[in-house]
Image (cartoon, rainbow, N blue to C red; front, side, top):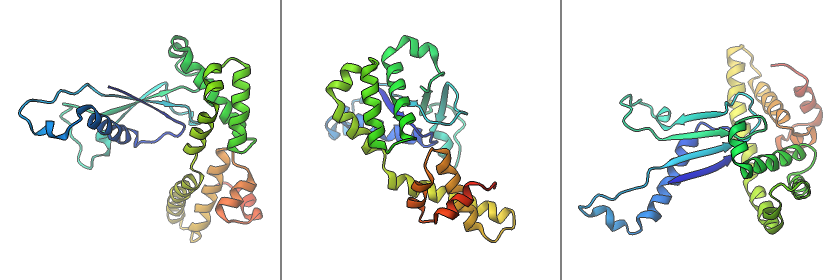
Length: 230
């Protein structure tokens, strides 16, 4: 049983997500839950969970293996079985042999790269439209994009939950920023937290105007944070 997922954000919880996906698939594979109460052993296909990664973290290797056991409070060292997420970096310049052997994956990587490039200049909807037009012109996933253009737009926009992203990033950066403030003996931990939010957003290609909108900070404050070092 092979499970595949695409992610543009590196996340240590990938193994847990993959396991939950597998449970859903196994439920459908088994069919009737009553089978689990019979004396006969229910045979299952071996699972393999692969994540195709094309985010902006340059520290991600060609192939990375994430282990579910790392999430357990008490580590099991027996090694009898380990659920893993195999993260394959499909950004340009990574896994060249794999890309050469799988042209469709290479084209998909190129297409997502175009979306990422244009999303730095335009809103996400316009970025996807431009990327689709350019990909079709360059014969990248041409037939698929012609036949399923609307589905591609809907899928990508559905994955980009802006409010959820803002809430998660703001919470994580705030916690880390306040901790930095405590460690440095700075009373204005909130300022440090907001500064980290701003700097993270800028590193992701967000404009000053967009950061003002989702943080509620003034333009001058955001600009000031952007020019400071933590």
